[in-house]
Length: 257
Image 1 (cartoon, rainbow, N blue to C red):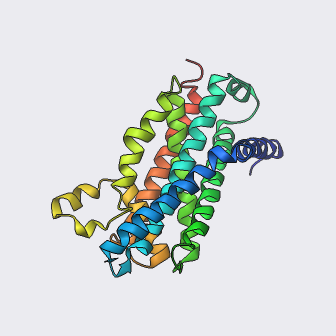
Image 2 (cartoon, rainbow, N blue to C red):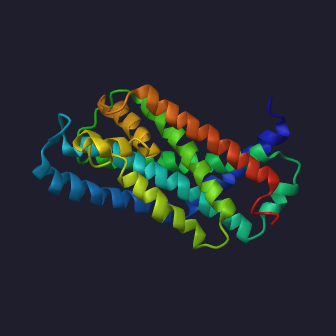
């Protein structure tokens, strides 16, 4: 049972994180909307008209789930990595560490901020997609669940990146050289059934593929991979990253060094 003091601390951190990205919405929310709109125009409208259908769906309809989840991933990740590293850089994270609140409260507060930003951007991108396609959501509850789980997972990943980052350049290395390739090779713009058998097997090592596939099922009702595998992978990575994040925070790695 969470105590009243811990609940107040959690609400305060979450409020601070939410206010931070809402205050600079031109930098945090607007870019994803513009970028995704360009994807819709270029890949969906121009290129999609030449590709035709994929898995029995218009190409625009097929890529919409991946583009929405891509926005959620990048925003949840970048919100936590930039915010926590900023707290380290300004040396105000020490005040939280010495305060009488456990590490899980601090971690949950930062993750909540990342999830909320990812959720808001995801909803905005979903609204934008309605101008380009008739979006009929097959499983709304599953869609929301995947929204939240993906936000938690990549918020944790952003936290770990921020813990080890020693400069502002370090917080851009992982998104550029790890996150972006995983997303683009995760089946956003194509079905893995199009790949040769060898590359299909290689693609199965990409965890982002399972998230996008489950999310595509929640919208279109179509998936390349059995749903149970998708949720198992998501659950495994969330649990692993949560344990690692909390351990790093409790040990003060990157903070007390």
